[in-house]
Length: 229
Image (cartoon, rainbow, N blue to C red):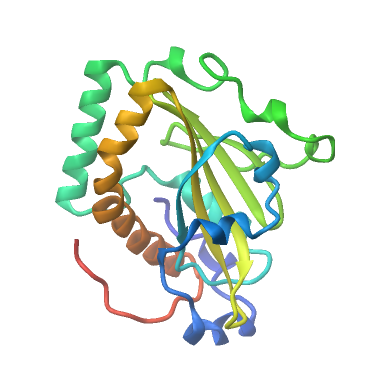
């Protein structure tokens, strides 16, 4: 990822730093946590399935979601991953090329229409969000407490959703949800096959890196030892 945004985020409000001790940990959380909140994505992607819901270790203030969306948009999907995780990604991209899973003809706007077409009238003029620099995601919308980006290939149409929620400790942090619309049997087989790798290796590695990069960018993060994959 890019270097931290220098002094813009170094001197944040004192109440954000004081919330550090109550920072919620990064962890998988029940799907009910996603359904219980009035996110706009419920209406926009009503026919998508909720694949995973994670609480991110990204404490901040009520206006920090934009900064987190930018952090995701700057990433490359491997984010200082362990050699094992990098190998898994390398195998995935190699198989993708061989099987043409990531052919541009299977992307957003060609195989599947963009979710932009589903935005309700009161969101037509909402900010789209940051441009992804290396990952094949396209931002859909960015609100004060909600961000969504989409991706599509031969296996599925997916959505990365970040919801900004106030934790009981008083700080704000992100709830990350992955929604999918599988493309037939191929899509369901693919998602079932990568499931163990997502939960055991990919997501834990991602959470550690998000926490590290959030800390580097000036976000208050509680101190705890890093865990190796």
